[in-house]
Image 1 (cartoon, rainbow, N blue to C red):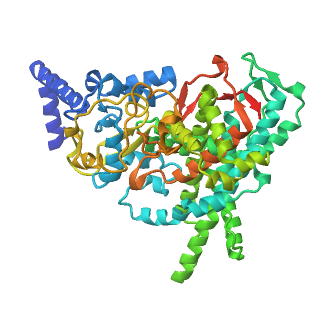
Image 2: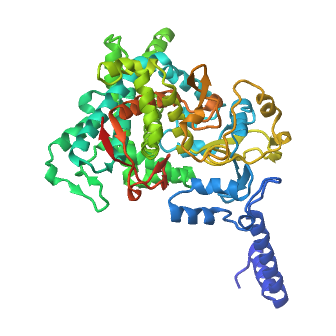
Amino acid sequence: MIAMTKSQINISNLLHWALVPSNAVTVIAICIALLYFSYRAALPRPIPGIPYNEDAANSILGDIPALLAHRKRTGQSREWLIQQTVTHNSPIIQLFIKPFSKPFVLISDFRESQDISFRRTAEFDRSVRNAELFSGILPNNQISMKSSDPRLKKNKELMRDTMTPAFLHEVSAPEIYTKALQLVDLWTFKKKVADARPFEAAQDIFRTALDIINAAAFGIDDSESLTKTYTEALSDVSRHALDRTDDGAYEFPHVPRTALEEAVEALVDSLAKAMGSPAPYLTNLFNFTFVQRYRKAWWLKNQMVNAEMQKSIRRIETNDSKIRCALDFILQRERVAAKAAGRPPAYGTPEIRDEICGYIIAGHDTTASTLLWALKYLADNPESQTKLRSALQKGYTTAVADDRNPTASEIIKIHVAYLEALIEEVNRKAAVIPLISRQTTVEGAQVLGATLPKGTTVFLMSNGPDFRSPSIPIEESLRSESCRSAASTKSHRGRWDGSDVHEFRPERWLKTSGEEAVFNVNAGPMFAFGGGPRACFGRRLAYLELRIVIALLVWNFEFETLPEELNSYDASDGLTTIPKQCYVHLRRL
Protein backbone atom coordinates (compact mmCIF):
# COMPACT_ATOMS: atom_id res chain seq x y z
CA MET A 1 0.00 0.00 0.00
CA ILE A 2 1.22 3.46 -0.91
CA ALA A 3 1.47 5.76 2.10
CA MET A 4 -0.67 8.93 1.91
CA THR A 5 0.70 12.31 2.86
CA LYS A 6 -0.95 14.41 5.54
CA SER A 7 -2.34 16.90 2.99
CA GLN A 8 -3.80 14.10 0.87
CA ILE A 9 -5.49 12.66 3.95
CA ASN A 10 -6.98 16.10 4.79
CA ILE A 11 -8.34 16.56 1.25
CA SER A 12 -9.76 13.04 1.28
CA ASN A 13 -11.46 13.67 4.60
CA LEU A 14 -12.86 16.98 3.34
CA LEU A 15 -14.29 15.36 0.22
CA HIS A 16 -15.80 12.57 2.28
CA TRP A 17 -17.39 15.12 4.60
CA ALA A 18 -18.76 17.17 1.71
CA LEU A 19 -20.34 14.11 0.08
CA VAL A 20 -22.46 13.38 3.11
CA PRO A 21 -25.93 14.66 2.06
CA SER A 22 -26.50 16.96 5.02
CA ASN A 23 -23.02 18.40 4.69
CA ALA A 24 -23.47 18.90 0.93
CA VAL A 25 -26.50 21.07 1.62
CA THR A 26 -24.37 23.14 4.00
CA VAL A 27 -21.66 23.59 1.33
CA ILE A 28 -24.23 24.67 -1.26
CA ALA A 29 -25.78 27.11 1.19
CA ILE A 30 -22.39 28.60 1.99
CA CYS A 31 -21.60 28.97 -1.73
CA ILE A 32 -24.94 30.64 -2.39
CA ALA A 33 -24.39 32.97 0.55
CA LEU A 34 -20.91 33.85 -0.68
CA LEU A 35 -22.23 34.51 -4.18
CA TYR A 36 -25.04 36.64 -2.79
CA PHE A 37 -22.78 38.73 -0.57
CA SER A 38 -20.26 39.07 -3.41
CA TYR A 39 -23.06 40.27 -5.67
CA ARG A 40 -24.27 42.74 -3.05
CA ALA A 41 -20.72 43.99 -2.53
CA ALA A 42 -20.34 44.52 -6.28
CA LEU A 43 -23.50 46.63 -6.55
CA PRO A 44 -23.06 50.39 -6.88
CA ARG A 45 -22.83 52.28 -3.61
CA PRO A 46 -24.68 55.58 -3.94
CA ILE A 47 -23.32 58.71 -2.28
CA PRO A 48 -25.91 59.86 0.28
CA GLY A 49 -27.86 62.98 -0.59
CA ILE A 50 -27.39 62.87 -4.39
CA PRO A 51 -30.22 61.70 -6.71
CA TYR A 52 -29.64 58.56 -8.79
CA ASN A 53 -31.51 56.02 -10.90
CA GLU A 54 -32.77 53.42 -8.42
CA ASP A 55 -32.95 50.57 -10.93
CA ALA A 56 -29.30 51.18 -11.84
CA ALA A 57 -28.30 50.88 -8.19
CA ASN A 58 -29.68 47.33 -8.19
CA SER A 59 -27.52 46.14 -11.08
CA ILE A 60 -23.80 45.44 -11.21
CA LEU A 61 -23.78 47.20 -14.60
CA GLY A 62 -25.41 50.28 -13.11
CA ASP A 63 -26.46 52.85 -15.71
CA ILE A 64 -24.41 51.30 -18.51
CA PRO A 65 -27.29 49.41 -20.25
CA ALA A 66 -29.45 52.55 -20.43
CA LEU A 67 -26.51 54.63 -21.65
CA LEU A 68 -25.59 52.10 -24.35
CA ALA A 69 -29.21 51.81 -25.50
CA HIS A 70 -29.41 55.58 -25.93
CA ARG A 71 -26.10 55.63 -27.78
CA LYS A 72 -27.31 52.89 -30.12
CA ARG A 73 -30.47 54.88 -30.93
CA THR A 74 -28.91 58.31 -31.33
CA GLY A 75 -25.14 57.94 -31.68
CA GLN A 76 -24.74 60.13 -28.59
CA SER A 77 -23.90 59.57 -24.94
CA ARG A 78 -23.44 63.13 -23.70
CA GLU A 79 -27.06 64.14 -24.27
CA TRP A 80 -28.16 61.16 -22.18
CA LEU A 81 -25.88 62.25 -19.35
CA ILE A 82 -27.37 65.73 -19.15
CA GLN A 83 -30.93 64.41 -19.55
CA GLN A 84 -30.55 62.74 -16.17
CA THR A 85 -30.30 66.10 -14.41
CA VAL A 86 -33.60 67.08 -16.03
CA THR A 87 -35.20 63.74 -15.14
CA HIS A 88 -34.27 64.18 -11.48
CA ASN A 89 -34.81 67.97 -11.57
CA SER A 90 -31.53 68.36 -9.75
CA PRO A 91 -28.34 70.28 -10.63
CA ILE A 92 -26.34 67.44 -9.09
CA ILE A 93 -26.84 63.74 -9.77
CA GLN A 94 -24.78 60.56 -9.64
CA LEU A 95 -24.41 57.85 -12.27
CA PHE A 96 -22.98 54.35 -12.14
CA ILE A 97 -21.11 54.07 -15.43
CA LYS A 98 -18.01 52.16 -14.37
CA PRO A 99 -18.44 48.79 -12.63
CA PHE A 100 -16.71 48.22 -9.28
CA SER A 101 -15.89 51.90 -8.83
CA LYS A 102 -17.26 55.02 -7.17
CA PRO A 103 -20.25 56.78 -8.72
CA PHE A 104 -19.62 59.60 -11.19
CA VAL A 105 -21.12 62.90 -10.06
CA LEU A 106 -22.60 65.32 -12.63
CA ILE A 107 -23.07 69.03 -11.92
CA SER A 108 -25.03 71.33 -14.23
CA ASP A 109 -24.69 74.71 -12.55
CA PHE A 110 -22.29 77.42 -13.67
CA ARG A 111 -21.56 78.91 -10.25
CA GLU A 112 -20.62 75.52 -8.78
CA SER A 113 -18.48 74.62 -11.80
CA GLN A 114 -16.74 77.98 -11.62
CA ASP A 115 -16.20 77.65 -7.87
CA ILE A 116 -14.68 74.17 -8.20
CA SER A 117 -12.41 75.20 -11.08
CA PHE A 118 -11.26 78.60 -9.79
CA ARG A 119 -11.43 78.61 -6.00
CA ARG A 120 -11.39 74.99 -4.79
CA THR A 121 -8.30 73.71 -6.56
CA ALA A 122 -6.98 72.22 -3.30
CA GLU A 123 -10.00 69.89 -3.23
CA PHE A 124 -10.43 69.17 -6.96
CA ASP A 125 -7.87 68.38 -9.66
CA ARG A 126 -7.72 66.87 -13.14
CA SER A 127 -9.18 63.38 -12.94
CA VAL A 128 -7.39 60.07 -13.38
CA ARG A 129 -9.87 59.38 -16.17
CA ASN A 130 -8.59 62.46 -17.98
CA ALA A 131 -5.03 61.08 -17.94
CA GLU A 132 -6.30 57.68 -19.12
CA LEU A 133 -8.12 59.30 -22.06
CA PHE A 134 -4.95 60.85 -23.44
CA SER A 135 -2.56 58.08 -22.41
CA GLY A 136 -2.62 56.60 -25.90
CA ILE A 137 -1.21 59.56 -27.81
CA LEU A 138 -0.31 62.37 -25.39
CA PRO A 139 1.00 60.88 -22.13
CA ASN A 140 3.54 63.69 -21.71
CA ASN A 141 1.23 66.59 -22.56
CA GLN A 142 0.03 68.90 -19.78
CA ILE A 143 -3.56 67.84 -20.48
CA SER A 144 -2.69 64.40 -19.05
CA MET A 145 -1.04 65.74 -15.89
CA LYS A 146 -2.39 66.39 -12.44
CA SER A 147 -1.53 69.72 -10.83
CA SER A 148 0.86 67.93 -8.46
CA ASP A 149 2.85 66.44 -11.36
CA PRO A 150 6.39 67.90 -11.24
CA ARG A 151 6.46 67.97 -15.07
CA LEU A 152 3.50 70.33 -15.34
CA LYS A 153 5.32 73.56 -14.52
CA LYS A 154 8.02 72.85 -17.10
CA ASN A 155 5.48 71.97 -19.79
CA LYS A 156 3.51 75.14 -19.13
CA GLU A 157 6.72 77.14 -19.31
CA LEU A 158 7.54 75.56 -22.68
CA MET A 159 4.23 76.61 -24.22
CA ARG A 160 3.43 79.75 -22.26
CA ASP A 161 4.46 82.43 -24.76
CA THR A 162 2.70 80.75 -27.71
CA MET A 163 -0.56 82.19 -26.33
CA THR A 164 0.63 85.74 -25.67
CA PRO A 165 -1.06 88.52 -27.68
CA ALA A 166 2.25 89.38 -29.34
CA PHE A 167 2.85 85.83 -30.61
CA LEU A 168 -0.78 85.29 -31.64
CA HIS A 169 -1.04 88.58 -33.52
CA GLU A 170 2.38 88.59 -35.16
CA VAL A 171 2.89 84.88 -35.90
CA SER A 172 -0.41 82.97 -35.72
CA ALA A 173 -2.87 85.54 -37.11
CA PRO A 174 -1.24 85.95 -40.56
CA GLU A 175 -1.29 82.16 -41.01
CA ILE A 176 -4.94 81.92 -39.93
CA TYR A 177 -5.87 84.76 -42.29
CA THR A 178 -4.12 83.21 -45.31
CA LYS A 179 -5.75 79.83 -44.77
CA ALA A 180 -9.18 81.39 -44.23
CA LEU A 181 -8.88 83.21 -47.57
CA GLN A 182 -8.03 79.89 -49.22
CA LEU A 183 -11.36 78.58 -47.92
CA VAL A 184 -13.07 81.65 -49.41
CA ASP A 185 -11.42 80.87 -52.76
CA LEU A 186 -12.50 77.23 -52.56
CA TRP A 187 -16.11 78.10 -51.81
CA THR A 188 -16.15 80.77 -54.50
CA PHE A 189 -15.21 78.05 -56.99
CA LYS A 190 -17.71 75.56 -55.55
CA LYS A 191 -20.49 78.15 -55.62
CA LYS A 192 -19.76 78.83 -59.30
CA VAL A 193 -19.96 75.12 -60.13
CA ALA A 194 -22.88 74.18 -57.87
CA ASP A 195 -24.78 77.30 -58.93
CA ALA A 196 -27.94 77.56 -56.82
CA ARG A 197 -27.50 74.24 -55.07
CA PRO A 198 -26.10 73.63 -51.58
CA PHE A 199 -23.06 71.44 -50.99
CA GLU A 200 -21.51 69.59 -48.08
CA ALA A 201 -19.11 71.74 -46.03
CA ALA A 202 -17.76 69.57 -43.21
CA GLN A 203 -14.65 68.24 -44.95
CA ASP A 204 -13.77 71.71 -46.23
CA ILE A 205 -13.93 73.06 -42.68
CA PHE A 206 -11.91 70.19 -41.22
CA ARG A 207 -9.30 70.62 -43.97
CA THR A 208 -9.04 74.37 -43.39
CA ALA A 209 -8.85 73.95 -39.61
CA LEU A 210 -6.01 71.47 -40.07
CA ASP A 211 -4.20 73.88 -42.40
CA ILE A 212 -4.58 76.65 -39.83
CA ILE A 213 -3.26 74.67 -36.88
CA ASN A 214 -0.42 73.13 -38.91
CA ALA A 215 0.62 76.58 -40.08
CA ALA A 216 0.49 77.92 -36.53
CA ALA A 217 2.41 74.91 -35.19
CA PHE A 218 4.92 74.30 -38.00
CA GLY A 219 4.79 77.30 -40.34
CA ILE A 220 3.86 75.22 -43.39
CA ASP A 221 4.18 76.83 -46.81
CA ASP A 222 1.24 77.45 -49.14
CA SER A 223 2.50 74.56 -51.25
CA GLU A 224 1.61 72.26 -48.34
CA SER A 225 -1.89 73.68 -47.86
CA LEU A 226 -4.52 70.93 -48.00
CA THR A 227 -7.24 73.40 -49.00
CA LYS A 228 -5.22 74.92 -51.83
CA THR A 229 -4.22 71.48 -53.14
CA TYR A 230 -7.84 70.33 -52.99
CA THR A 231 -9.04 73.46 -54.84
CA GLU A 232 -6.52 72.88 -57.62
CA ALA A 233 -7.60 69.23 -57.91
CA LEU A 234 -11.27 70.23 -58.21
CA SER A 235 -10.46 72.87 -60.82
CA ASP A 236 -9.23 70.13 -63.14
CA VAL A 237 -12.59 68.35 -63.10
CA SER A 238 -15.21 69.18 -65.72
CA ARG A 239 -18.55 70.42 -64.43
CA HIS A 240 -20.25 67.61 -66.35
CA ALA A 241 -18.37 65.08 -64.23
CA LEU A 242 -20.05 66.30 -61.07
CA ASP A 243 -23.18 64.69 -59.71
CA ARG A 244 -26.33 66.00 -58.16
CA THR A 245 -27.57 63.88 -55.26
CA ASP A 246 -31.19 62.89 -54.75
CA ASP A 247 -31.64 65.45 -51.97
CA GLY A 248 -30.75 68.34 -54.26
CA ALA A 249 -27.26 68.96 -52.93
CA TYR A 250 -24.33 69.07 -55.30
CA GLU A 251 -21.86 66.26 -54.75
CA PHE A 252 -18.32 67.11 -55.75
CA PRO A 253 -15.99 64.32 -56.87
CA HIS A 254 -13.98 62.51 -54.27
CA VAL A 255 -10.38 63.67 -53.95
CA PRO A 256 -8.21 61.20 -52.01
CA ARG A 257 -7.20 62.50 -48.63
CA THR A 258 -3.58 62.91 -47.68
CA ALA A 259 -1.81 60.66 -45.19
CA LEU A 260 -1.77 63.58 -42.75
CA GLU A 261 -5.55 64.01 -42.90
CA GLU A 262 -6.09 60.29 -42.34
CA ALA A 263 -3.61 60.18 -39.46
CA VAL A 264 -5.18 63.12 -37.63
CA GLU A 265 -8.66 61.69 -38.16
CA ALA A 266 -7.53 58.31 -36.79
CA LEU A 267 -5.90 59.86 -33.72
CA VAL A 268 -8.99 61.94 -32.98
CA ASP A 269 -11.13 58.83 -33.47
CA SER A 270 -8.96 56.90 -31.01
CA LEU A 271 -9.58 59.61 -28.41
CA ALA A 272 -13.32 59.45 -29.10
CA LYS A 273 -13.35 55.69 -28.58
CA ALA A 274 -11.44 56.03 -25.32
CA MET A 275 -13.81 58.78 -24.20
CA GLY A 276 -16.83 56.53 -24.75
CA SER A 277 -15.29 53.61 -22.87
CA PRO A 278 -15.63 52.82 -19.14
CA ALA A 279 -11.94 51.82 -19.23
CA PRO A 280 -10.11 54.42 -21.40
CA TYR A 281 -6.61 53.18 -20.60
CA LEU A 282 -7.39 49.60 -21.67
CA THR A 283 -9.15 50.87 -24.80
CA ASN A 284 -6.08 52.90 -25.76
CA LEU A 285 -3.78 49.99 -24.99
CA PHE A 286 -5.78 47.67 -27.25
CA ASN A 287 -6.16 50.18 -30.09
CA PHE A 288 -2.50 51.15 -30.31
CA THR A 289 -1.32 47.56 -29.89
CA PHE A 290 -3.63 45.66 -32.23
CA VAL A 291 -5.51 48.06 -34.55
CA GLN A 292 -3.48 48.78 -37.68
CA ARG A 293 -5.20 52.09 -38.45
CA TYR A 294 -4.22 53.58 -35.10
CA ARG A 295 -0.73 52.12 -35.12
CA LYS A 296 -0.13 53.63 -38.57
CA ALA A 297 -1.46 57.00 -37.43
CA TRP A 298 0.86 56.93 -34.41
CA TRP A 299 3.83 56.21 -36.68
CA LEU A 300 2.86 58.98 -39.14
CA LYS A 301 2.44 61.44 -36.28
CA ASN A 302 5.97 60.72 -35.09
CA GLN A 303 7.36 60.98 -38.63
CA MET A 304 5.67 64.34 -39.15
CA VAL A 305 6.95 65.75 -35.85
CA ASN A 306 10.47 64.49 -36.57
CA ALA A 307 10.52 66.10 -40.02
CA GLU A 308 9.14 69.44 -38.83
CA MET A 309 11.47 69.44 -35.84
CA GLN A 310 14.51 69.08 -38.10
CA LYS A 311 13.31 72.00 -40.24
CA SER A 312 12.80 74.13 -37.14
CA ILE A 313 16.22 73.24 -35.70
CA ARG A 314 17.88 74.24 -38.98
CA ARG A 315 16.06 77.58 -38.92
CA ILE A 316 16.96 78.53 -35.36
CA GLU A 317 20.56 77.26 -35.53
CA THR A 318 21.33 79.18 -38.72
CA ASN A 319 20.49 82.36 -36.84
CA ASP A 320 17.23 82.85 -38.68
CA SER A 321 15.85 85.40 -36.24
CA LYS A 322 12.29 85.31 -37.58
CA ILE A 323 10.07 82.99 -35.54
CA ARG A 324 7.68 81.37 -38.02
CA CYS A 325 5.63 79.11 -35.78
CA ALA A 326 5.01 77.67 -32.32
CA LEU A 327 7.62 74.92 -32.74
CA ASP A 328 10.31 77.50 -33.60
CA PHE A 329 9.43 79.38 -30.44
CA ILE A 330 9.53 76.26 -28.24
CA LEU A 331 12.87 75.05 -29.60
CA GLN A 332 14.37 78.53 -29.45
CA ARG A 333 13.37 78.72 -25.77
CA GLU A 334 15.06 75.34 -25.15
CA ARG A 335 18.17 76.49 -27.03
CA VAL A 336 18.48 79.61 -24.87
CA ALA A 337 17.86 77.64 -21.65
CA ALA A 338 20.47 75.02 -22.62
CA LYS A 339 23.06 77.70 -23.39
CA ALA A 340 22.46 79.38 -20.03
CA ALA A 341 22.82 76.03 -18.24
CA GLY A 342 25.92 75.03 -20.21
CA ARG A 343 24.38 71.88 -21.67
CA PRO A 344 23.41 70.63 -25.13
CA PRO A 345 19.83 71.47 -26.20
CA ALA A 346 17.32 68.67 -25.62
CA TYR A 347 15.09 69.30 -28.62
CA GLY A 348 13.43 65.92 -28.92
CA THR A 349 12.11 65.33 -25.41
CA PRO A 350 8.78 63.48 -25.00
CA GLU A 351 7.34 66.61 -23.39
CA ILE A 352 8.14 68.83 -26.40
CA ARG A 353 6.79 66.23 -28.83
CA ASP A 354 3.55 65.71 -26.93
CA GLU A 355 2.96 69.41 -26.33
CA ILE A 356 3.21 70.24 -30.04
CA CYS A 357 1.04 67.22 -30.96
CA GLY A 358 -1.58 68.24 -28.40
CA TYR A 359 -1.49 71.77 -29.81
CA ILE A 360 -2.41 70.33 -33.24
CA ILE A 361 -4.95 67.65 -32.34
CA ALA A 362 -6.96 69.61 -29.78
CA GLY A 363 -6.68 72.88 -31.70
CA HIS A 364 -7.87 71.32 -34.94
CA ASP A 365 -10.87 69.37 -33.73
CA THR A 366 -12.38 71.93 -31.36
CA THR A 367 -12.16 74.80 -33.84
CA ALA A 368 -13.50 72.74 -36.74
CA SER A 369 -16.49 71.51 -34.73
CA THR A 370 -17.32 75.02 -33.51
CA LEU A 371 -17.17 76.41 -37.06
CA LEU A 372 -19.53 73.71 -38.31
CA TRP A 373 -22.13 74.71 -35.72
CA ALA A 374 -21.52 78.40 -36.49
CA LEU A 375 -22.41 77.81 -40.16
CA LYS A 376 -25.68 76.17 -39.15
CA TYR A 377 -26.63 78.95 -36.75
CA LEU A 378 -25.79 81.65 -39.31
CA ALA A 379 -27.97 80.05 -41.99
CA ASP A 380 -30.89 79.43 -39.64
CA ASN A 381 -30.78 82.91 -38.11
CA PRO A 382 -30.69 85.31 -41.08
CA GLU A 383 -31.46 88.32 -38.89
CA SER A 384 -28.37 87.63 -36.76
CA GLN A 385 -26.31 87.08 -39.90
CA THR A 386 -27.45 90.40 -41.37
CA LYS A 387 -26.70 92.22 -38.11
CA LEU A 388 -23.22 90.70 -38.04
CA ARG A 389 -22.48 91.73 -41.62
CA SER A 390 -23.68 95.26 -40.96
CA ALA A 391 -21.56 95.45 -37.80
CA LEU A 392 -18.49 94.25 -39.70
CA GLN A 393 -19.03 96.81 -42.45
CA LYS A 394 -19.48 99.54 -39.85
CA GLY A 395 -16.32 98.45 -38.04
CA TYR A 396 -14.08 97.94 -41.08
CA THR A 397 -15.00 101.12 -42.95
CA THR A 398 -11.68 101.39 -44.79
CA ALA A 399 -12.13 97.89 -46.21
CA VAL A 400 -15.62 98.84 -47.39
CA ALA A 401 -14.31 102.03 -49.03
CA ASP A 402 -11.49 100.12 -50.75
CA ASP A 403 -13.84 97.28 -51.81
CA ARG A 404 -11.60 94.61 -50.28
CA ASN A 405 -11.47 92.12 -47.45
CA PRO A 406 -10.57 93.46 -44.01
CA THR A 407 -6.94 92.69 -43.22
CA ALA A 408 -5.80 90.43 -40.39
CA SER A 409 -4.59 93.52 -38.54
CA GLU A 410 -7.98 95.22 -38.87
CA ILE A 411 -9.85 92.16 -37.62
CA ILE A 412 -7.51 91.91 -34.62
CA LYS A 413 -7.36 95.58 -33.66
CA ILE A 414 -10.92 96.70 -34.37
CA HIS A 415 -13.22 94.91 -31.95
CA VAL A 416 -16.70 94.43 -33.37
CA ALA A 417 -19.00 93.81 -30.42
CA TYR A 418 -21.57 91.83 -32.40
CA LEU A 419 -18.87 89.51 -33.77
CA GLU A 420 -17.63 88.81 -30.23
CA ALA A 421 -21.21 88.25 -29.08
CA LEU A 422 -22.00 85.88 -31.92
CA ILE A 423 -18.87 83.81 -31.27
CA GLU A 424 -19.73 83.53 -27.58
CA GLU A 425 -23.29 82.53 -28.43
CA VAL A 426 -22.00 79.83 -30.79
CA ASN A 427 -19.76 78.52 -28.00
CA ARG A 428 -22.69 78.49 -25.57
CA LYS A 429 -25.13 76.78 -27.91
CA ALA A 430 -22.72 74.35 -29.55
CA ALA A 431 -20.97 73.21 -26.35
CA VAL A 432 -18.60 71.11 -28.46
CA ILE A 433 -16.83 69.99 -25.27
CA PRO A 434 -19.85 69.68 -22.97
CA LEU A 435 -18.10 68.43 -19.87
CA ILE A 436 -14.94 69.09 -17.88
CA SER A 437 -13.66 66.27 -15.68
CA ARG A 438 -12.38 66.81 -12.14
CA GLN A 439 -11.63 64.50 -9.21
CA THR A 440 -11.77 65.03 -5.46
CA THR A 441 -8.33 65.00 -3.85
CA VAL A 442 -9.55 65.10 -0.24
CA GLU A 443 -12.02 63.11 1.80
CA GLY A 444 -15.34 64.81 2.47
CA ALA A 445 -15.44 67.62 -0.13
CA GLN A 446 -18.82 69.34 0.18
CA VAL A 447 -20.81 70.07 -2.99
CA LEU A 448 -24.40 71.32 -2.86
CA GLY A 449 -25.01 69.66 0.49
CA ALA A 450 -23.45 66.30 -0.41
CA THR A 451 -20.22 64.85 0.98
CA LEU A 452 -17.99 63.35 -1.72
CA PRO A 453 -15.47 60.60 -0.98
CA LYS A 454 -11.86 61.11 -2.01
CA GLY A 455 -11.26 59.99 -5.60
CA THR A 456 -14.78 60.79 -6.85
CA THR A 457 -14.88 61.82 -10.51
CA VAL A 458 -16.99 64.94 -11.09
CA PHE A 459 -18.29 65.98 -14.52
CA LEU A 460 -18.88 69.73 -14.82
CA MET A 461 -21.50 69.92 -17.56
CA SER A 462 -22.18 72.87 -19.88
CA ASN A 463 -24.83 71.53 -22.27
CA GLY A 464 -27.92 71.51 -20.07
CA PRO A 465 -29.65 73.40 -17.26
CA ASP A 466 -28.18 76.84 -16.50
CA PHE A 467 -26.43 76.93 -19.89
CA ARG A 468 -28.81 75.90 -22.70
CA SER A 469 -32.01 75.35 -20.71
CA PRO A 470 -33.54 77.01 -17.62
CA SER A 471 -31.60 76.79 -14.37
CA ILE A 472 -32.63 74.35 -11.66
CA PRO A 473 -33.19 76.30 -8.40
CA ILE A 474 -30.60 75.81 -5.64
CA GLU A 475 -30.82 76.96 -2.03
CA GLU A 476 -28.02 79.46 -1.47
CA SER A 477 -27.20 77.82 1.87
CA LEU A 478 -26.15 74.64 0.03
CA ARG A 479 -23.35 76.43 -1.80
CA SER A 480 -19.82 76.66 -0.45
CA GLU A 481 -18.70 79.80 1.37
CA SER A 482 -16.34 80.66 -1.48
CA CYS A 483 -19.17 80.35 -4.00
CA ARG A 484 -21.49 82.57 -1.95
CA SER A 485 -18.77 85.19 -1.47
CA ALA A 486 -18.02 85.35 -5.20
CA ALA A 487 -21.61 86.39 -5.94
CA SER A 488 -20.78 89.95 -4.90
CA THR A 489 -17.66 90.34 -7.09
CA LYS A 490 -17.43 92.17 -10.42
CA SER A 491 -16.67 88.92 -12.26
CA HIS A 492 -19.95 87.37 -11.14
CA ARG A 493 -22.03 86.28 -14.13
CA GLY A 494 -25.73 86.80 -14.49
CA ARG A 495 -28.34 84.14 -15.24
CA TRP A 496 -30.02 83.58 -18.58
CA ASP A 497 -33.69 84.31 -19.03
CA GLY A 498 -35.30 80.88 -18.99
CA SER A 499 -37.89 81.92 -21.57
CA ASP A 500 -35.34 82.30 -24.39
CA VAL A 501 -32.25 80.43 -23.20
CA HIS A 502 -32.87 77.74 -25.83
CA GLU A 503 -32.71 80.28 -28.67
CA PHE A 504 -29.68 81.44 -30.65
CA ARG A 505 -29.54 85.13 -29.72
CA PRO A 506 -26.16 86.90 -29.79
CA GLU A 507 -27.78 90.04 -28.35
CA ARG A 508 -27.81 88.39 -24.91
CA TRP A 509 -24.05 89.09 -24.76
CA LEU A 510 -24.40 92.83 -25.41
CA LYS A 511 -25.05 95.72 -23.05
CA THR A 512 -25.60 99.39 -23.78
CA SER A 513 -22.82 101.84 -22.99
CA GLY A 514 -23.75 105.35 -24.06
CA GLU A 515 -25.05 105.17 -27.61
CA GLU A 516 -23.48 101.86 -28.57
CA ALA A 517 -23.68 98.23 -27.58
CA VAL A 518 -20.58 96.65 -26.04
CA PHE A 519 -19.70 93.01 -25.55
CA ASN A 520 -20.30 91.74 -22.00
CA VAL A 521 -18.35 88.55 -21.32
CA ASN A 522 -20.07 88.17 -17.93
CA ALA A 523 -23.61 88.36 -19.30
CA GLY A 524 -24.39 84.79 -18.32
CA PRO A 525 -23.18 81.19 -17.97
CA MET A 526 -20.80 79.72 -20.56
CA PHE A 527 -18.13 77.15 -19.74
CA ALA A 528 -16.80 76.00 -23.12
CA PHE A 529 -13.15 76.35 -22.10
CA GLY A 530 -13.40 75.42 -18.43
CA GLY A 531 -11.88 77.78 -15.90
CA GLY A 532 -9.19 78.37 -13.33
CA PRO A 533 -5.52 77.38 -13.55
CA ARG A 534 -6.36 74.24 -15.57
CA ALA A 535 -8.62 75.92 -18.12
CA CYS A 536 -8.17 75.18 -21.82
CA PHE A 537 -4.65 76.23 -22.74
CA GLY A 538 -5.51 77.12 -26.34
CA ARG A 539 -8.61 79.26 -25.78
CA ARG A 540 -6.96 82.49 -26.99
CA LEU A 541 -5.89 80.84 -30.23
CA ALA A 542 -9.39 79.39 -30.65
CA TYR A 543 -11.05 82.79 -30.27
CA LEU A 544 -8.59 84.33 -32.75
CA GLU A 545 -9.31 81.61 -35.32
CA LEU A 546 -13.07 81.97 -34.92
CA ARG A 547 -12.91 85.76 -35.17
CA ILE A 548 -10.88 85.77 -38.40
CA VAL A 549 -12.61 82.86 -40.17
CA ILE A 550 -16.19 83.91 -39.35
CA ALA A 551 -15.49 87.55 -40.25
CA LEU A 552 -14.09 86.63 -43.67
CA LEU A 553 -16.82 84.11 -44.46
CA VAL A 554 -19.68 86.47 -43.59
CA TRP A 555 -17.92 89.30 -45.44
CA ASN A 556 -17.80 87.25 -48.64
CA PHE A 557 -20.91 85.05 -48.51
CA GLU A 558 -24.52 85.08 -47.48
CA PHE A 559 -25.46 81.75 -45.91
CA GLU A 560 -28.96 80.99 -47.10
CA THR A 561 -31.50 78.78 -45.36
CA LEU A 562 -31.25 75.09 -46.19
CA PRO A 563 -34.05 72.61 -46.90
CA GLU A 564 -35.07 70.52 -43.91
CA GLU A 565 -33.57 67.31 -45.31
CA LEU A 566 -30.11 68.93 -45.34
CA ASN A 567 -30.40 70.69 -42.00
CA SER A 568 -30.58 68.11 -39.23
CA TYR A 569 -29.33 69.15 -35.81
CA ASP A 570 -28.57 65.57 -34.84
CA ALA A 571 -25.05 65.28 -33.48
CA SER A 572 -22.34 62.68 -33.03
CA ASP A 573 -20.02 62.19 -30.09
CA GLY A 574 -16.39 62.31 -31.13
CA LEU A 575 -13.58 64.00 -29.30
CA THR A 576 -16.00 66.93 -29.63
CA THR A 577 -19.72 67.10 -30.40
CA ILE A 578 -20.17 67.55 -34.15
CA PRO A 579 -23.28 67.92 -36.33
CA LYS A 580 -24.11 64.90 -38.48
CA GLN A 581 -25.02 67.24 -41.34
CA CYS A 582 -23.37 70.50 -42.36
CA TYR A 583 -24.27 71.89 -45.77
CA VAL A 584 -23.97 75.45 -47.04
CA HIS A 585 -26.16 77.25 -49.57
CA LEU A 586 -24.14 80.29 -50.59
CA ARG A 587 -24.70 83.60 -52.29
CA ARG A 588 -21.45 85.34 -53.22
CA LEU A 589 -21.34 88.97 -52.11
